[in-house]
Structure formats: structure tokens, C-alpha cells
Image (tube, rainbow, N blue to C red):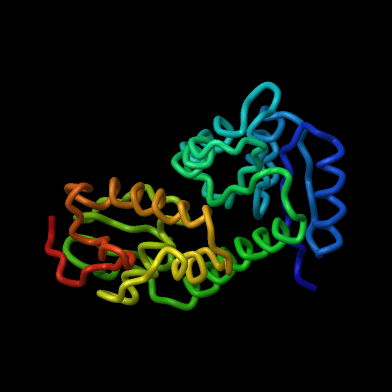
Length: 241
């Protein structure tokens, strides 16, 4: 019997933790809980969860700091930020420090469970597909190469520190060179979400972060290009930078 995926809930409001625990366990997940940021960080390090639901406003250490610390340590566990704030800046900040997604309170439990499932499926599928491929980096374009086994991207032979979502976006676009995808397309294909609205801002932030890491000049990108009014594409004509 396959082991249940474990979701770490880091949230200081007990009633919300209870609701999340009940619905996640009913959906087939195991759960662990932490009620402050310091304990959440310790449990993220020690219990190796499959996904973290991370509140922003926490005692001892806020959610942004917890996420940033994990990313700085090389931990790419999927993180969904939970925030009661409506400000665009908070959503963007969460993505910029390496969160995979955000959801704003009050949220639909059905939507939250669906997003958890999408992230779990994505990481599971990537692990399975990597195990089936040959090891060793293969060229993408220019001086970029990728190792499917280690989920690492290299620029001129040097590894680039990408989040899992940035890796997913780059390898998806590179697998379909010169094909333009709208933000909604990418939300469906890369994020596995069938919704639209303000959440497509997630794509723009992830593209910007990715460009800052792989492009010589992010303001004039060679790899991840924009087709104005249509979307993004990976240029197969990109030359080594």
C-alpha cells in the first residue's frame, strides 16, 4: 500500500488548523501541524513533508522568513502561502522568495485541496519521469543544459539555483520551442490549475525570476521571450550567452 503524502500545516489559528486537518485527512493525506514559524521550520527540516501550507502572520518567525530559510538551505518542498492580506505586494513577495503558490483567506476548502493535489501530482510525476530518463545534462539552447534526473539546470556548466516551479516552467517551454503560451495556458499546463483571474500574476512573477537567473540581460531576454498580447515562448534560436 502506497504511503500517504504528508502535508505540514503551519498556522497559528487552531480552528483553521482543525478544519484543514479534517479536510486533508478526509482527502487521503497525512498531516502534521505547527502553530508558530519556528516550530514550523523545525518540522519542515525534520519530518520532510511532501507539501507545506504556510501562513504568513505567525508568532516567532513569519511565513516569508520560514519559506526563504528553507529555499536558502536548498529545500524545494512545495510551499503554498496562506494569507489574509489582499495586497498584491504580499502575493508577489511570497512568490519571489520561492513559494510555489498562494491562496487568500477566506478560501474555499475545495479549491485549497485541489491546489494541494495539483502540487503533489506535479512533484510525483517529475520524480517518476526523472527516474526513467538517462542521467547527465542535455542541451536546451545556447549555453543552457538540463539534467532530468537531478532536476538541475546548468549555464555554461555551472548549476543554477531554481525553485521547482521555475524548473517546471523552463523545461515545459523548452520542450515546446517557439510555441507561444498565454498565462492562462501556462497556469493550466504548468501549474495544473483550471482557473483564471488575478492568479495569472503568478506566471509573470515566475517568468521574471527565471529570467533573472538564466538570462545575461533579463531586460532583453534571449531564452524566455514575450509575444506581446499573446504570451511567452522559449526561443530555440537563442545563442550562448
